[in-house]
Image (cartoon, rainbow, N blue to C red; front, side, top):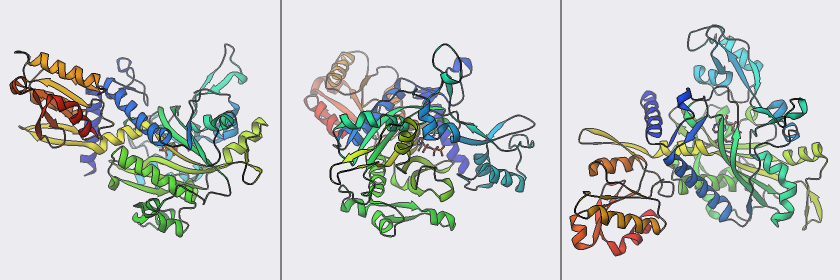
Length: 504
Ligand code: ATP
């Protein structure tokens, strides 16, 4: 079963390369592990995902503003945030073949144990106790060392300790460091959020599983600032949020070796398993985005609470939204309560005041932050994986991406049945009409109709329109639905409206 599922990943990687979705960077030079390019189809898909996220979390909300921070910033930001001293992963090397592994991942793979957040010393003890060796050649492993994941570079022409800077390893600090500049111009009162989509860089020890673990990736992140005494006063928390049902895997369930279970959000809030109403609100909002907008199937998602040992130094409570990947349940998104750690640290290290004046209590407070954070590459890969199907047609296996139409890189494809007898001219007219009406539309006249359908199915195009001889006589066209393969004839005059209706 696992093997079959992994095979699906191989097929998706091959589809992505073949169709210009995502492929390793600079393949002519042997590429570079953990770095990827988005091709002509991929870049459209990525823009659609970004637009959907921005619309949902920024444009449609009155309480969120945006930011686009620089990738390199004053290095003291990373000292204040703790990244210079402690943004590390544990690594081991094989003494024989020199292969390098992330120690916690190696243990998880070999012993099927979750060891997130366990100290390097404890990891080393586990390796010794279970006599773990290099999975490739059974060579002896070195002791566990820690490795800082930040990419360093320099600013200016003279290399010295003062010129050392870092490519940002998370987008969050751009928001925290800019908080003093954004707050006065945002004209918002607490609670409100600052959102950002942008690049981040992590020198991962073992990039793997395609774009799931890359070294350069985009993140979509929201820092939501709340009065520290009002974490349980969420005016946006509705009945619908309370009744929202999903699979939860609480810290206690993990510690007792139990399986995940379905709960309503209210049940877990009442038992104080979810610590605050604002945290509960954002859990629901993020899950709704993934299922209702991106279209990922809810049964493949769960909320998993971080156990004490894995909580980041700044967090009192963190939940991940996990997806059931072919290599097991893993984090797609994190939703952390970062407390007031970051703003307090920036106050300390910069000597500037990062507190805000609260009109209601007429006092200064340092806001507390709930942070939903997600890698876009991971989301795009998950959306592809979740919508990937195969069907057999005339003895051939055909790939089908049942992407949510808002994500589809091409919304409508237009084909003439033949290139001759005026069919191509009519099809181009339809193509231009749809293009001028704002659709992402593609014209294709090469190969058999079956092949052209297959090409579009594979990239998730929801609608294919064919112009045939009847179209010339009756002024209509055939519309084919991607998921069912069903066809219907629609009058030319109604084509634009029909496409709008079907894409909704
Ligand atoms: P992991 O445990 O998988 O390394 P993390 O807990 O370090 O992830 P966060 O710091 O919470 O991750 O990062 C926020 C989000 O960024 C994650 O939920 C994930 O979607 C994404 N992400 C993190 N690391 C990577 C990576 N190397 N490649 C792609 N996406 C990533």
